[in-house]
Amino acid sequence: MTKAGVLQIGPYPAWDQEPLDQAYEVHRLFEAGDKSAFLAEIAPRIRAIATRGELGASRALIEALPNLEIVSVYGVGFDAVDLAACRERGIRVTNTPDVLTKDVADLGVAMMLVQSRGMIGAEAWVRDGSWAAKGLYPLKTRVHGAKAGVLGLGRIGYEVAKRLVGFDMDIAYSDVSAKDYAPDWRFVADPVELARHADVFFVTLAASAATRHIVNRQVIEAVGPNGMIVNISRASNIDEEALLDALEDGRLGSAALDVFEGEPALNPRFLELPNVLLQPHHASGTVETRKAMGRLVRDNLAAHFAGAPLPTPVL
Ligand code: 8YV
Image (cartoon, rainbow, N blue to C red):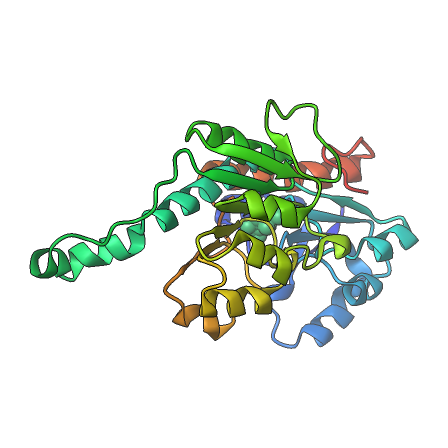
């Protein structure tokens, strides 16, 4: 039987690559020199796209593939897939929810702790001999008992808030509506009001055109000179220019970021800032979770080609 053609947009670990290569005729776009020529040659054979959360699939790419049936995303976020283009042609879309939720929450909370206790600077203080030469490391800010604001109480936001309970934090959240699964956490509809409450402000909402720059200058200033913003969602949820301005002139105390506009390149202004923790978009990056994500990518493709219900459909 001929194998279905799959266009792979970005790399996967070997443990995912091998089974994918066995089951499908895989064409790796990320390895092609001249991408347009490559696409023109293989386009008619492509029935599926296997992509990554941050890479998605653009309208131009979808339109270049006349026989495309499904886009399988290795990630929970599907904001980079042009859903309208998929809907127009009845193209299915899947993602990898649930399996990564707790890892993403773990990293978000770790980022808060690392940043508030100055652990990156403290490590350097030991390594560069400052401890011996200069003495005690500058004192930092307590986390337990502080006020947390969680913007987006979906699966990831809920797991973040659950972890913050262990730090005796005073938790409030914002979402389109109050959630009946939020224990005694305070619902605050307005993100600016949530930011006023928060010493630590977590951005955990799924990104879409509607949430673009939801964390705007006003929200950032409401978090304030003693506050911290932690972003483990998508860069587009924050007005990055406003964030940089506020971090530079002290209107925002600090930030801990796993995602950036234009990543993996990032605005060089970030590199000059002492009050920002920079992470390489790896909140879901554990071996266990990435294996589960890879399996879901393949399970969705296999179900589609077998005519079975998709395990985790978006569309
Ligand atoms: C991944 C992600 O880092 O789930 C998402 O939406 O962005 C992350 O889990 C990414 O998709 C892997 O490429």
